[in-house]
Image 1: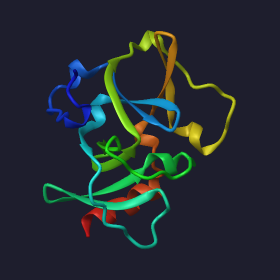
Image 2: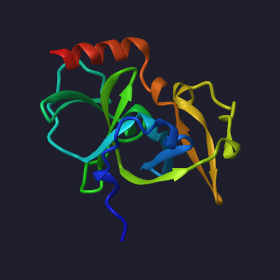
Image 3: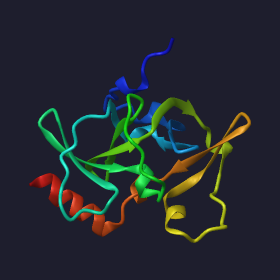
Image 4: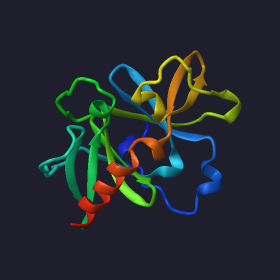
Length: 168
């Protein structure tokens, strides 16, 4: 039995060995991947302090070892239906433009190698807001993982609002 992927704590300085490595996770019926170099840790769902006047997908903040971190529900960010959190729900703590942000996902899958040769550009079918987060489509065996550009998950203004939130 493999180790619970939510207990991963990544050390800094591993950038070179992290190339082509993606943390994969599920939101709804789809498998997504984010570059592992942006992931600082994975934790189980915990108590979230809700905040007023935030977009619906910003669930609030958590206290992670004394640091206040805003958390977003990726499901809501992608316009999917809200669902109750369970023991498989995880928070992936990522670094977006030098700021720690928690991403709530349905389940964390695994860390996998997806070489650049197996990544295709995103399809140009949609000009919708969701397509701007997509970095590419990773081909793994007979499946496709939607690779997200974590740096584009938030608009500039939203990122500034979250930074102010974390500083309070």
